[in-house]
Amino acid sequence: MSGEKTSSSLHILYAEDDPASGRLVQRIAETEGYSVKVLGTAQEFLQLLPLEKPDLLLLDLHLPDTYGLDLLAKTRARLPDAPVIVVTASSSVDDVIKALKGGAIDYLTKPVDHQRLLVSLTHAVKMLRQQQDLTRLRSELEETYKLEHMIGSSSAMAQVRDLIRQAAPSDATVLITGESGTGKELVARALHYASSRVARSFVDVNCAALTETLIESELFGHEKGAFTSAISRRRGKFEQADGGTLFLDEIGDMPVATQAKMLRVLQERSFQRVGGEEKISVNVRVICATNHDLEQAMQKGTFRMDLFYRINMFVLEVPPLRERLSDVPELASHFLAVAHRAGKYQVEGISQEALAALCQHNWPGNVRELHNAIERALTVCKEEEIQPYHLPPAVLRKSLPLTQANGHSENQNMVEAVEQFERAMILAALEKNYWNKTQAASALGVTRRILAYKMQNLGIERSEPEHLRES
View 1 (cartoon, one colour):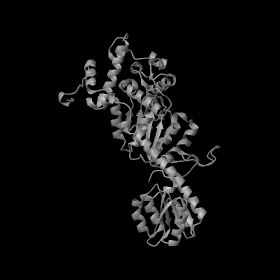
View 2 (cartoon, one colour; view 1 turned 30 degrees about the vertical axis):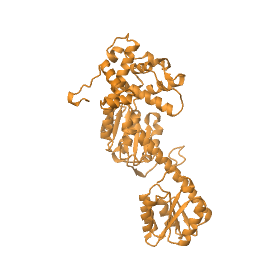
View 3 (cartoon, helix red, strand yellow; view 1 turned 90 degrees about the vertical axis):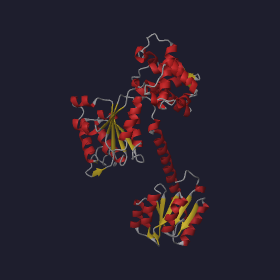
View 4 (cartoon, helix red, strand yellow; view 1 turned 120 degrees about the horizontal axis):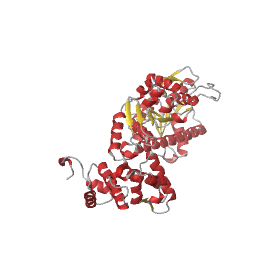
C-alpha cells in the first residue's frame, strides 16, 4: 500500500462489467479528485492489482468470470490493508452480509447514489489513514525493539540477547526474572518483535495492579450482567492477544485462586468469560515476569507449584545494573539523546566527572533509577553539560566502594575516577565492535592512534589467543 496521500492522488481500482455503472462511479469520484480505473473482468482486475497498487477497491458482486465473493477473498489475501467497497444490483441481504464478513467495509446498491458513494469513499479514506498510522506505528515499534538496539555492550547483555534469539522462534512460555527496574518488559517486547507473531498484538497485564475481584475480568473478559457494573460484554486480555503475545508482568502477585484458572488456560488454551458459558479458544504466546523468588513463594504457599513448572519452561534472567556497570555510559547517553530528540531540554552532553560518578553508583533501582537520575539532572541543569552537582544526592552518596569498583583506595581522586570511566567506556566500545579498534575509535569519536594510546596507558588488553587479536 502506498504512503499517506491527499484525496487528489488516491487511486481506485473498480471491477465492474457494466460500462454505464463504471462510467458513473468514475465521473463522480474523479470530480472529487480520485483517480479511477475500471476493469470489466475479475481476471483483468487480479492481474493489475500488483501493478496498479490501488489505495481503495470497488468490486461488483456479479462479474461474468467469477463470483464476486470469491474475488473479494482473493483481493483481501493479496492486499489485506486496502479498504474494499462492494457494489451490487442484488437486493439479497445474504450477499451483503457475506461480503461484510469477508472483509468489505461497506456496500453500495445500483444505481449508485452520488452522495452515498462520496460518503462511502470518505469513510474508506479514513480507514486507510488509520491503517497507515497503525502500519507506521508497528514499523516504529519493530525498529525500537530490535535486538541490536537493546542498550548494553557488556557480556551480561550479550547473553540476554542470545537467550532472546533462542526463545523467540518458539511458542514456549517464557519466565523473565530480575529485580525491579532491570527492563523485564523491554525484554518481553524484544521477544515478541523477534518472533513470528510480530504482526499481531503485544498485550500486557500488570498482575500486581489488579485486585482479586478485577483480575479475572481483565484476563478473561465478562458477559453483560456478570456483576453489578458489567453493563456490556467485554473482551479480556487473552482474546485481545489472540494470535499474538500476552505479557503477564509481576505474575508472582497473582491471587492463588486466579493461578488455578491460569494453569487451566495455559494447558487447554481455552477459557470462559466471567458469567459466560461459551468456551473461547485462543492462540496466544504467554510471557511472564517477576521480581519475586517463586520457589520461595511456593514454599510459603503463595504460588502454585503446578503453575510454576508450567511457566518455567524457558527462564531468562535480566541482570541488575550493578553487574554491568560498563553499560552505564551507553545507557546515560541514550536517555540524554531521547530527551534531546523530544526537544524537552537543550543540554548537549554529560561531563566526564558526572559520568564517572554514574559509573561508581551501585544502582539499587537499576536502569529505571538511572533513567530518573538523567531526567532529574536535565531538569535542573542550565549548562551545556550535566555536572556531578546536577545528579540526585543519592547517586553521589550511595556509590560502590572504590576498592570494589577497581581495586583503588576509597580516597580515589578525580583523575582516577575519570580514568575508571574512560576504561569502562573504551571496553564497552571495543566489546560492541568485536575489538575492532578502527570501528571502536570511530564510535568513541577519536582517532585509532588516540584509542591505542589510551588503551596502553589504561592497560587494556584483549584476553584472547594471539591469533584472534586484531592486527
